[in-house]
Image 1 (tube, each protein chain N blue to C red):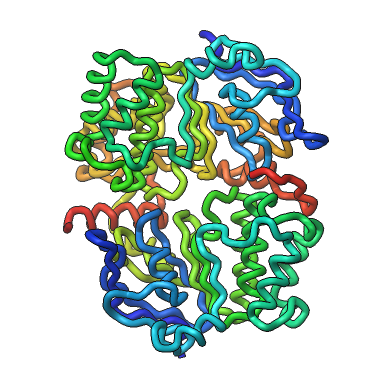
Image 2 (cartoon, rainbow over the protein chains, first blue to last red; image 1 turned 90 degrees about the horizontal axis):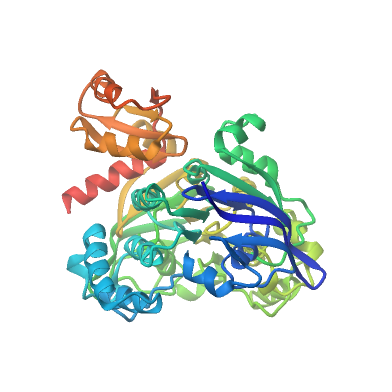
Length: 249
Length: 304
């Protein structure tokens, strides 16, 4: 089994502030990996480095087999990314968004056509294909956004708090999509503030003040911290200190 | 006198029914939760109560004052923390707080006992611009600014959205202390688990209130038997259960699936056994607010 992500002492400094402090971990291909931490713990910085958007200060890392220091363009082609702040164009229709991103990812005309059919069918959005994205309910936007993030069959998809604010049924339907993608062999790297969602991951890491404080399966972490739920594990590890000294969130 | 009274409020935006026939009251000293996802109508209701938006129909009273006729008086008496962070990003913690105190013709010192607990947590960074604070610290500052004039009623629109579990827990501890001081609080949240921390809640979805009760009674009124199930391959288990005709609903709930059935549980066991799931566990489970919310959502979808 190949590794989707390998990091060794990956570090990012902003001036004298260390946002990500020598993190070391591996993610297997096809794994659902939960990347947890308090606001300001350094998750977003780490994620931006792994996506090839931010140059690390030191350490080593490969994503989909490419070096994130020197091969950022290859990294970007092999990954999908979705954040809570949508990357969909609100003033384009559903179909236009799919075509636009298909073009960006370099898919052929034929591929875009067949992908569009497949995706609209799967999300049951055929009726809404010609509607502006701005008119869709939040839950549908998130599902569409995820589907577009995996349009080009990336080997890894990064999801930054993908389910914030949606209703409990839609949130679970979204996780159905994640499970399904993982079942096809896509690696899922996901951040969330919902601790029940942490349980859906194969393994999770918990970041505190720029460092990875724990990394294991949810079951083993609960055992190790003698906690009834992942929420308890999280509270034990990430309990904010009075001297909270982070500025990012 | 009830500090918040809402009577048959309706609001449309074009074709969108943002609020449909909303009525409820909040009692003196009560911590009342408005629980629902984005787009349920929570913020619209807050804006009507804060006198920033007119309802199409119906009326509402805050501290005995009418939201249209007495809007100026209401604005002086309420503390309102909008969903979007709306403090001045380029002013420091201290400057923001002084600014809001001045606007309300008071001073930070005058009502310091009310904000002391919360302010002390952020005081070490009082010289830092609000825009450079972490999510949890921003929320604490925003709460201080909403409290600085000692409001008669507190409106908090999604104060914990996007905030990590540690900061959420701290924030709710602060709300419990404020309630003990007798301030009625109307708070909205998309996090179902936070409903348990309120005295009463209204479950709201698509502009309609599905149920109003204490969280304990809402859980009690959940009529169905829930089974918790898990196996090594959860995705396969979900698919198998959804393909089974005796399954009523099947949703992931953390470590387990929550499954409701049309048939006795033995039938599911008989169905799953030949499918050879590793480490299959089936056991009874207690419903929570989220189970109740999802059931009510499904009922609402069926009747629409």
